[in-house]
Length: 223
Length: 272
Image (tube, rainbow over all chains, first blue to last red):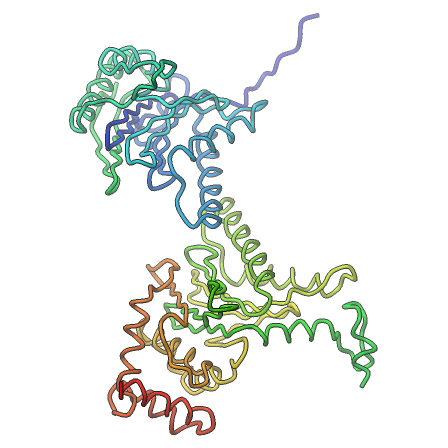
């Protein structure tokens, strides 16, 4: 007697790719704007990037309903933090909160593949990359989502940072300048769009610096 | 006469149909330092007097941000006020989470009032010893409410609570009819002048008061000391002359008893 399996899944994958790169005084967070289900496109204009705090921006691919719920929970928790501490959350603090929030639902996870980007307490760029249940790591760059397998090896080639396990601790931050990093992001997305059917339409890029956040949109192939 | 016999429990009625514990709680509000609220069609200003336990300590925070569109000023047991502010913040956040829109002020004050009422009908609880001036902005406009320890709440154009609030209320009663059309700056000025009324002759300095504003396109925030001092300077510097000091003149004329003293005090800064 084989085990009965569900004829319905609570999850769906809406596709898309997210990337973040940390610089010495900036952080670039980028994601495509295509939302799909199966082989169909739901919309070509959906933002996967969400500002949580002045210095922390979240980008998530996966099941967008879960992503939206996760964003709402984090936003509410941030408001509580602000009331209690009279200041905004730092990026490392938000990183820990996100990890805890994800693990809280260890046995019915948020189907969300997250990249958190921002500036740390010293104004240096930082990127945190996650799995669906909250395991996270501070890195110099990361890609998540359907195009991640195409993008990550190329970022490794261009930006490879020393392992965080090495002693003495070495910086994961890329020495690239901001325009160079933005250019690299545009290049990787153009490439990923070619071969990943779930990535395309438009590319949204958010550049976080000490003086504020700039947003740029670039067209990608729509096929 | 019967007061002492029926005032032990909040759940005991007096023969005249009063709950003395609740009334005693309202007394606690009158003991706290003054808090004032005023509103126009588009803005709400909350102001309070900075009272410190001693010269060595910092002053009590009496005004709290509940959300971008709601603020609260308290008088009485400030610890109770802090706890209720936390409740209000929580309600506001939960509402925003569920409905993705700001909590209407009227809904918040009802919940607050119901919470206060519970404490008047449980023998193991005591009423909250704090009065709250809740000011906020929602789709139906700007609002100012006063929540009592009794569980009652009322809407006001302007109100003052705490010690020596009667002086401020007298000032506000004279001018409230014009508040609806007041500009943001005039509203702030009136709030600071009302605060001055409660100081009973003490020279008004920006360090003595806290002022907060919220309005259309203006999330709740505190005014910094410089801005407050600038407003004070417009009427404290020239109290005798007819320009902006027209305010001081009107007061000196209107209510002689305590204002007379305030008028005299105003002369001194000019002489310095």
